[in-house]
Image (cartoon, rainbow, N blue to C red; front, side, top):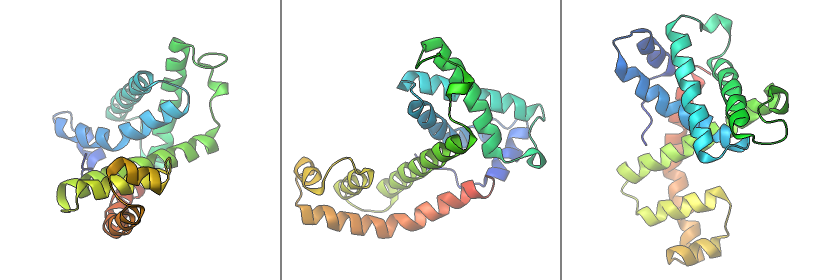
Length: 197
């Protein structure tokens, strides 16, 4: 995945034009992974999270085209999170996840949901930045894989080395090489979100 480099403002302007079907794809590519990640963190399985994200994006798209969102009414992120909260609650009710199913009051408050959004946004940006490096940097795929696994923090350098047929020193060198290359990509991608959120 390579995030479109148009600003969110440019994407939103494109969504206003019913004939501009090409605007939907980049906007969806940018925000759907965040919404899916939030759904999974709130107890939905992968399919349920994907459904809730799809319903959220569709509801956003329809409401935006109907003129119900403007910058003066608040941040895009807050508005999209509000839609997602309702869709996740609906999905939880359908799948009976957690005590009380889909009650809104058993979902996180605004501050917790905002923190979840930030965490999922960082993860989406990292995935996109690494995908970009894989396709454009000339770094060996194993080097990027070692960095990614180390960055996720679920395994030790020794475990990663064994899985990838590397030494622990190679894993640490991979982290160093990829960090130098990925930081500017992450900064650029974060600026895309920051411009509107």
